[in-house]
Length: 245
Ligand code: SF4
Ligand code: SF4
Image 1: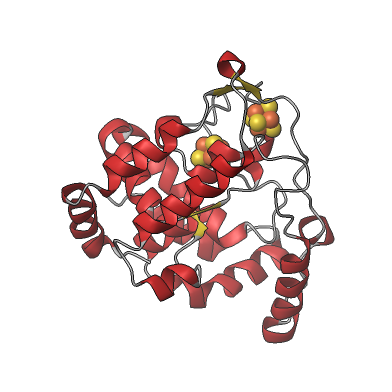
Image 2: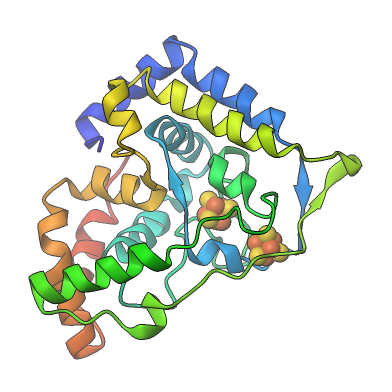
């Protein structure tokens, strides 16, 4: 993931080489949609490539300066607690009115939600079971059943503007195009392994906290499960929420 000292170099590289301009073109090929903005689907932020994260980061820097401390605090909380607190949700949901704070720069997976045919949005079931087993074996942490068994409901309320028809191939070719742009930043083998395709709050949290946060994650989770709160987490939110980006 990108540390704070590398993110601006990468952002400038992506801008100069037209990667963010091309990303915009890919996004614009998708139809505009409307929905009821309940933010239910924002309880499980989906994966995004680094090139998309850079686009979101730039948007946040240019448009949301006064909201950055709140976003960072929510993002850090999400990173540590997403597997133990069923009420976790995307840090970019505006706490005031449930709207998306980064809507113009939201990643492909958010744009595609509700456009996939039934059966096409992958469920996390199998992966979550494996993760629950890993946490039990490695850290003696039992992830709550409500988190392990949670399934994002399919939403039938997404309306496509102008009655445009969704061609399923468009979604497939578009995500392939985003992956192609990612290979302008990382070797193809890394892109193919999906190592850089992680939930976007993870990108931002690790940029601010650093890679060392991975090793501290289970300690916070354990503290939270045992005590219902985590002094460690509160300390991180206090410290890193003040970072200026
Ligand atoms: S897509 Fe559906 S679940 Fe998501 S915010 Fe809109 S209405 Fe709610
Ligand atoms: S980026 Fe926006 S649309 Fe996507 S999950 Fe977060 S709040 Fe929802």
